[in-house]
Image (cartoon, rainbow, N blue to C red):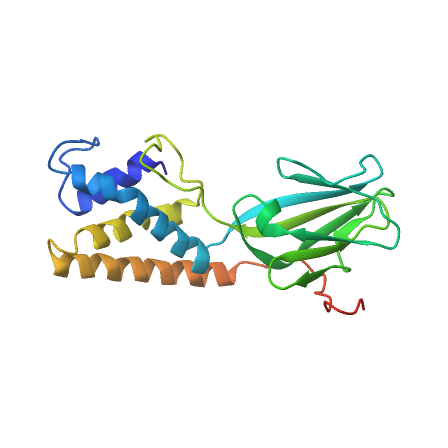
Length: 221
């Protein structure tokens, strides 16, 4: 679902757009100007407690580098015998929100692949990995949705599942129409919360990946 489709649906909810095409005029300019901030708030809620948006960081432990190097979603760190790498996920992973327990996988040079079982977390956002031998770690984490701004083009896809995107106009309408019609605003907010509840139930029913275990931060088991 595109940003333009979300704006159109929100305006139709609050009776500020006639027809099936997005119209921008003096009657809805104030609503359109306020939409990006409210849409970001809706997406933060929906992906925070509804359907998480996953990001991925590849950590390549290799003798080919002497210092950590970041390139896109790949971090290369040098092999260092009997040592650990402490990775600040907030600084390293794009749009990082939180680590996903159990969603760390390890591939060795010998071709072995599976859930990593020797990692820990310091604090809430520092991932600790052993780097004594060459390996590739794939780390999945909860990510924030790319932020919407006044410069976001109408054809930009929101980057979330459609069932998530379809609830955003309800939240926008509820927030922007509060001073115009509190009853309509409350009705839209109730619809949004009911939709969020359905997302939570559907998300809880999905299988959870990973079979590794979280290690104690002071002892390697």
